[in-house]
Length: 110
Image (cartoon, rainbow, N blue to C red; front, side, top):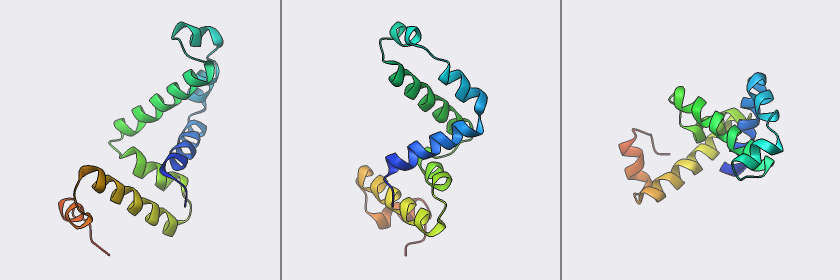
């Protein structure tokens, strides 16, 4: 199973492939653009790709990480495991038990 960061990178790449005009605009950024904002070109392109992905998931009212896993993981069983792992991490970050998290979000516990 991939890490959440790996799923995110794959999903963002797939997103940019689905929107070639947007990818072309990001790829057209140059060193001068990067210098103007005090970044390297790689940092600027990554930032812009992240912003585009974030805007897309926000507009669609999606959880970006859940959507990234669903988009980037073709194996449905592995996707389900990755989603559960992500949600368990989310529950821990909130400081609540997995059972409480499931009750609050109307999820069935396995």
